[in-house]
Image 1 (spheres, rainbow, N blue to C red):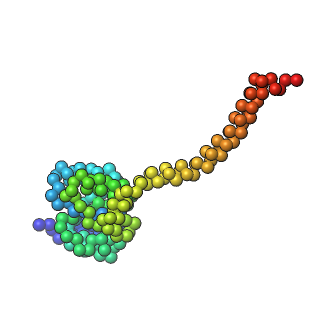
Image 2 (cartoon, rainbow, N blue to C red; image 1 turned 30 degrees about the vertical axis):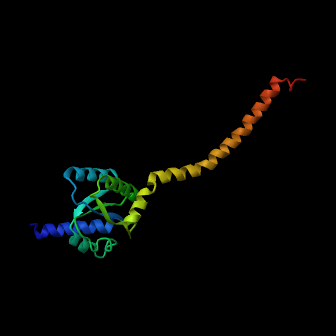
Image 3 (cartoon, rainbow, N blue to C red; image 1 turned 90 degrees about the vertical axis):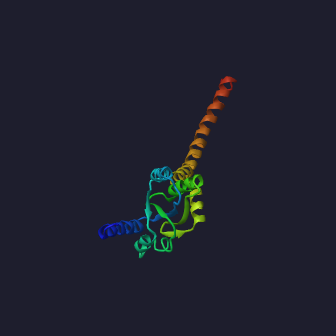
Length: 175
């Protein structure tokens, strides 16, 4: 059995995680093998997130007074959580991809930007483009008018050069 000091430390760490991370996904991991768990942790780490197994009653107590209080209420079964303060889309994609490959891994609920979401919303989030893709699209949209303007300006000079070249070839400019 754990000592009271260790339990208090676990409680404090969990409370800190639930209080400071705006993106938390509660999952069920029943019947995962050690190898499957290793692959899951590797996928979560690659998404820039963290993963931990939690006790349901400890999570409920630690979540009291935090934005995650509704998220951790009434958890049942074996529960784990993946959390990040970074990109929730990358984490949702990693978890959804893993869940498709391992049917024993399930979603229970999630919290994105401090709001509790259901399993359907998690799948919708996973279908969104990543932050980097969105930034690339915005940058393209910002640059597109400038590129069109540069093309139009250079076209005038190019067209003038073509006309002058044709005039020289046909001796239109001679006296």
